[in-house]
Structure formats: C-alpha cells, structure tokens
Length: 351
Ligand code: NAP
Ligand code: ZN
Ligand code: ZN
Image 1 (cartoon, rainbow, N blue to C red):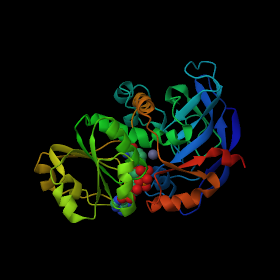
Image 2: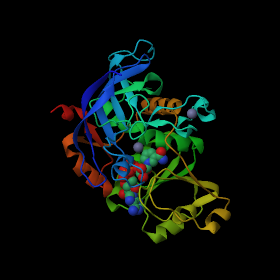
Image 3: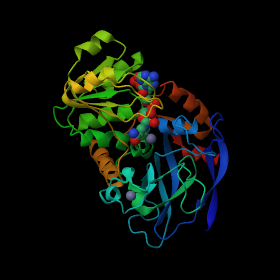
C-alpha cells in the first residue's frame, strides 16, 4: 500500500518523554479523507495511555484524539467532504459496521471491537494506529465529523472527545429543564459538562478539590460550586441530585457522591482511574440508586453534539501550547493544573 511519511510526536516507553518522530500515513483509499491537522486537544486519556496507567499500551505510541483540520485530499468515492472543508476526528476511526451496536450508531460498543484513533491494530498498514499529534491523518469518511462553521476550530477541538463523553450520558440520563445535575472534577471533561448540562436546562452543581476553581465554576456557568473536601457542605447536599457525572481521573471515594443522589438517581462514571472504586451496598440499596458508566459516544451522536454546541456556542476554555511543550503540559495535567484544556497548535510541528 502506498504511504506518506509525516512528522508526529509520540513516546517510546511509559517512562519516556514525548518526542519528534516520523510515522507513515496511508494514501487515500476510495472512501478516505486526508486531513491536515491544525489543532489537537490533550485529553487525560492520552496521558493515561502514554504512561501505561491502564496496562496494555504498545510503543511507540502517538496519542491525540481531539483532532480538527482541513481536508486536503478525498478518495474517488467520497461524497460527504471536499478539499478545503473543516473536519473533525474523535476517538473512533472504524468499526465492524454490522453488529447490533454499530447498526444502532453505538460504535463505541462494537462487539468485535472498534478501531480507536491511536493504539488500535491498524487494518491497513499493520502495527497500531497513530493519533492526532501528527501532521496529517487519513480516515474513512463515515468516521469523519463536520465542524460547525461558527465555532473556532482550536477551542472546538476538545468537543471531539470531552464534548461527546459528557453530552452522551447527560442526554442518556435525560437531563432537561429543572434536572438537578452534579459534575465531579473540573478538568477538560468537567468544564464542558457544565456548559452542556446548562444548555440542556439543568441546574448544575460542581464538586472540585481545587480551591481556585470554586469561583471559576460560576464563570463557566455552574449554579453552585462545592469544595468536595468540605464535609459540612457535602452533608447538606444529601439526596439532592438526579444525576451526577463523575469525571475524576484518579482514585477517589464514590460513596460520597452516591449519598447525594435522590431516589432512582444515578452516579455516572466517565473518568477512568486505573484502580477499583469500592461501592458500599447501602448507598445503592437505599434510594434505589444506580452506579453506572458511559463511554464516549457513537459517530451520529458526536455529530449531533457538535451541532448542539454550534447552536449554543459551546467551546472549551483552552490553554494553547506548541507541540514542543507537550511534556510540560502533561506534567501540569497530571496535577489538575490546566484551565481547562490544553490544545496543541499543530502548526508548531512544522517548525
Ligand atoms: P482532567 O482535565 O485531568 O480532569 C480531571 C479532574 O479530576 C481534575 O481536573 C480534577 O478536578 C479531578 N481530580 C484529579 N485527581 C483527583 C483526585 N485524586 N481526587 C479528586 N479529584 C481529582 O482529565 P479529563 O481529560 O477531563 O479526563 C477525565 C477522566 O476521564 C480521565 O480519567 C480520562 O481518561 C477519562 N475519559 C473517559 C472517557 C470515556 O469515554 N469514558 C473519555 C475521555 C476521558 P478538580 O481540580 O476540580 O478537583
Ligand atoms: Zn479523550
Ligand atoms: Zn460493530
């Protein structure tokens, strides 16, 4: 198969910094779109994978799954995109297209397994897929998203993972006017969850461990903000929420949040700490509460989320960095020290 060598940033090992490397991209197949990447958000999952927090990472690894750019080439059968269009790529770049979940637009649950944009077996080139910290990417048009014209591409890039990962559960658990919604953790996902839940009509309370984010939460649109280490405030909110979305990336006590749910309320995990999270039986038995989870979202729902964010003018609050500064950004992300999403200006990769 014909390929093209492009520049990328990736890592050779769990304990090695990211560095410049050369990678191969396939030439467009009939259904493919080639995109020149202009911006790529940095999700905590990139960091978990690079550091092998979950186990199973293979190296060299090029992360990046909040990708926006411009279409530079299309295959002969492509109908949805033309050269020059703005385009986005999130986590999923292929799936079986035939299983019960793919047929329902739930490619995130594809039974034989979907192809994630980085670190999945590459069906075309062998080896593993290469993510968005690179000059270009080639993806089947069915897995490429249209970016709303009114959104700035840099601040919209985090929607491709952070946006869909929070939109999908908020919609699934039927957040609407008057819903009492809790958001745990104000990072990349959490700050987008505030904006999306507000746009859906929810009354939003955020829980943070960072004192400096308490005041900020209101600027982000939250109705209330709680320092989660304040036991008194936490106790006052017992049995208050219909749904709580937990975006925390590290081990923490979920029982504190289960107790805050009303009858039939659900604590929905989207954060992916590598350690197990113990649940006390009484916290779910009393109040018929649910402890649940949610994984990104399908392609159709991702487009729906982008259009929703376009309509409501929702984008991320970002700190733009050069790719050469990515290791420092990873260190800060590890310490919850970003307001609220790092986005790489991919033009820096050409320097
Ligand atoms: P992030 O920007 O680092 O935000 C995580 C937030 O969690 C931090 O800002 C911090 O908020 C809070 N936090 C961190 N350590 C904590 C601790 N020890 N105790 C309590 N709170 C803590 O990360 P992100 O990109 O939003 O991703 C969040 C998690 O979601 C990651 O685990 C990521 O892998 C996962 N994820 C899952 C999916 C999915 O499909 N389910 C998709 C994308 C990402 P405060 O400073 O406000 O306390
Ligand atoms: Zn992500
Ligand atoms: Zn499938």
